[in-house]
Image (cartoon, rainbow, N blue to C red; front, top):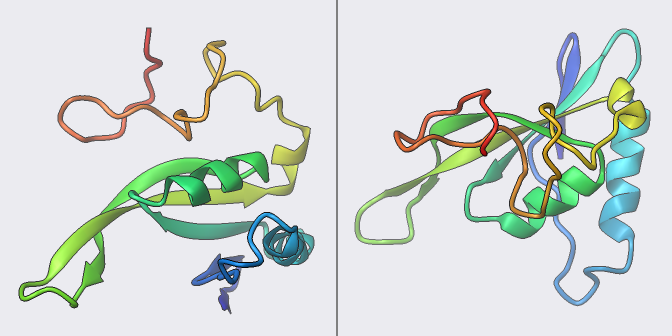
Length: 131
């Protein structure tokens, strides 16, 4: 499910049945969305739950970059009280296909835990590199 904005697409939901995961179906859906990026609609946006590490890693492998965080973006109404969760903002642009994703902007080797700019102790995004 996605929204077509004037200058970009926003992916609202992409779901693969748990029995069909790791068979390429999700990547095919994502590739179809990536093929829609043009000069008119220059990028894709996808907000991912902070707790969904599998999706974060998968998006990084598919040339998305974490660009920020949205505080209390997701609301869980299933509990007695509403619980909120932050979202990582992921962006895809065609030019990311030509980027070297094996290292961070400052040259450190990226691992699975590195999905974008590191967080500092106050839970704010910073452009600084760890180390």
